[in-house]
Figure 1: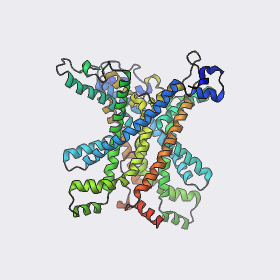
Figure 2: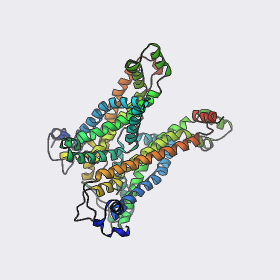
Figure 3: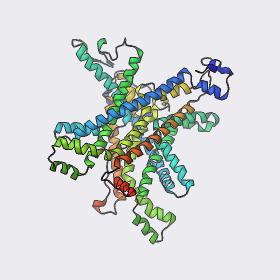
Figure 4: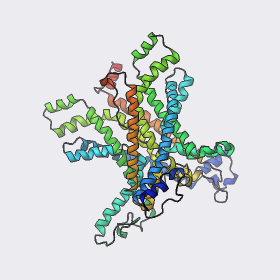
Length: 268
Length: 294
């Protein structure tokens, strides 16, 4: 069986298109590359959607935590504390069993017990909490002169936030936010090891990598392949976020621009 | 456990709960909590030692050693840590068995990797198949500790490397002016001063390490996640004196609270240590303390 046939069979295996049975014996390098790469679909799906939705919630959380009203501050503080203070792994398990229990009384919630929605909700809350803290830190370090100038121009309320506070906050938070994004993609590998069932063996990249490692009893091939895919993904994320960073900093003189430092956070 | 627990069906409310929470299986859960604490207590210093070695190597003047150090510190970036955990456990196990195989059975005729199997001679098995159960469990735990130490050592090396560079240059120049050798400067000037710069990073790492402990579950150790799943599942009246429905949600809620309180306590303690370490240092934190006292 040539490699091209394998690619046709397994390239979309993680979303249920192609060959139904996973290879059982005589594993080729091509099979491992194709299947693990196919699993990356889920990592990208979870990462991209959680980031895009979490971004807005994170901004709200940061503004809430900075608010002078206790009604806005306390819930934001608690939300951030709960999701940053506990392991993501436990959050996944807890959420899964909560959804299982809820499903019995409210059948409408059944989709939440599947990974594509349930795990996405957890990742959304998690990344919102972590980025919320980053944005909050940036909010605190907005130069005093900027807000004073806004006041002098008579800007207030929404206009002041949208034109002055938000762009500066983004600019200051962006390098840290890039790391958070990279890290979120890494965290997506936990999904299928934490309660959420793998339907019809449609798992993510790590699921297939560990499948091969279990079957061949040889970790030295599948895991480096996984690493290869993730390094490429990381480079793409760094590149895309770097473009945004350049745009956010375009009004500053060259040497004052914040440099992107690739320093991902680790396990949550 | 208690004397009134002999007939669970007659119990109500709190008495039932007190009996339920002290069954033999729950003791397994409590022991696994201790396992987690032991893992943290062993891993933290070992990882710090790995990190120190890595950071020192990365600063070395000897090129290959520097490459080794830099490679180690950058190995864990870009790739999901869970992949490292799952990789190292198998890789270390096979590595040890391979080494023992080379020593104990030098004239073994067959290849070690036969297709999908990894075959070493019986004498090289680790632990020996005849050894008792507790040895197997301890070995699994030992592998987990080593894996944690390698991965977190790389993170710690990163932090320490940064901290060593953060020590003000004049401090080292002064040491040189006094005629100290490179080694003396390192041990007497650099190392004592770097901790204050390393502490924010290290405390962050400690938090991360706490939050990484549930991953023990993936390494095949019977940890709290294992027991929470085991104990929380629906229990039929035919097999147990304490039948209940699916309580896994509540068990994981308890774990969540456990971790939250653990991180909160660590946060408070680390803040105290930071306060003590910055005392008298030539940093903005130390200066602020001095002003507050003056």
